[in-house]
Every structure is written in structure tokens, then in C-alpha cells.
Length: 266
Image 1 (spheres, one colour):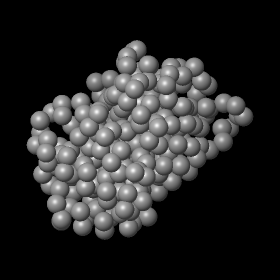
Image 2 (tube, rainbow, N blue to C red):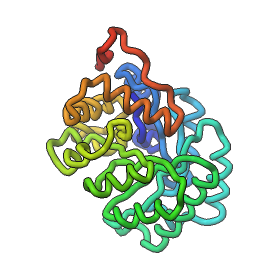
Image 3 (cartoon, rainbow, N blue to C red):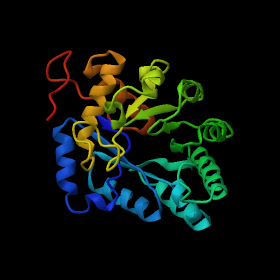
Image 4 (cartoon, rainbow, N blue to C red):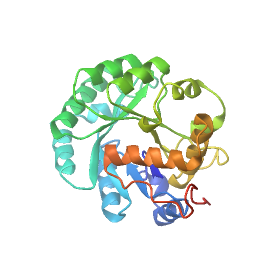
């Protein structure tokens, strides 16, 4: 499995990162993508990716940090993007749910980073909260982009539009909370366009809800997705890992120990 969005660069993991990585490996995770938020989190993501071979980094200015966008931030992103462990620009986007950064500043940072991703030929990791139409319109204004709409919260119409533009949709532990809008979305999206993620330390899945999330728990996201798609678990592992391979360059899913079965998880 690939945890395609996990914030190991936050202070939540400062004391036990080695153990977190080990538990992920034991659970069958063979790749983790750590996105940036602000410049310090980008630096930390790059550092972690350099330390652990299974980790890749993305660099970008999150909408909550949009006021940090400018020539200095852009130069840092360009320098980090040259590193082999950096595989995407992100996470970038719009968040109109929390008024933590002026909306116009968010729009400016989002548009500029989309152009940067296109120039560098890197995928983008997109944060979208209460801004579905504006996010999709922004993506459409930069032809040739590819990437991940992380923690997808739009409806079926937005999902279909994103897929038509060549984007992948990613889902978190919220799939384990019961039925919701995602069930309708999943009926309209090809399995090969779906990614799984934890968004750790947030979005902890059942049965660990209320605890700190971590990449090992992406196994529960995969199980919920398999149930909702009515597919064998190993097919979800394979398709989501293949999508992460195509988009971010992660290795594809290793062959199971028993043909036709997924390896056991802890």
C-alpha cells in the first residue's frame, strides 16, 4: 500500500518517527508521501524523505499559509523540486471553510503554484475545502496539469469533472465512518483513479478514531474502500499503488505471498 498523503513532518511525530515508519512497514505500507504546508514543513518533508527510502516529499504552500507566498518561497520550492526525493508540488489549494488566510492571498498562491507545477512538469497535490468550483476552474486554467485531489470532499459531478481533467481522487479514514457522499462519488470514478491516504495525524480511521493517526492505519482505509467498491482487498492495494506509481513514481504493489490474496496486516 501507498499512503499518498501523510504529515510526518509535523511535531506530532518528532519523538517516535522511527517507530511510526516501522509500524507502517509491518502493516504492508511500502511508500509514504509527505506534503509541505509552509517552508519549515517543506524543509522537514525533504529531510525525512532523504532519511527513509520509502518516503517521498512534496513541497508547496498550503492555503492556510498563503501569506508566506512570494519570490523567496518560490525560489525555495524551485530548489527543493530539483531533488530526486521531491515528486510533487503541494499541498496547495483553497480553503474557504476556515478563514485562516485571506481568500485573495489563497487565490494568488494557488494559481502561481499551479503554473510552477506545470513548468516543472510535476503533479500537484490539491487541498479543497468549500471551494470545489473555484478549485476545479483554477486547475482548468492550467492545461496539462495532473495530480491528486486529496481528502476529496466534492460530489459526483465534481468528481467526474476532475477525472475528465486527468486528476486522481484520494480518500482518508472518513470512509470508515459509515455511508456518506463518498459512496455516491465512488460509483462514478474508475478504480484506477483512486488513491488512499491517512492525512495523518488527522482523519484517524475506525477503530482508532480519537487517537493520533499514522500511516500504518491506511490499511483500514483500503479495507473500507474495498468494501464500498465490492472488490477484493488485494485489488484495491494493487490499483491504488499503481495509481501512486504512475503519479508519483512509487514502486507498484509487491506480489502477495499467496497468489490472489493480500498479505496479512497487523
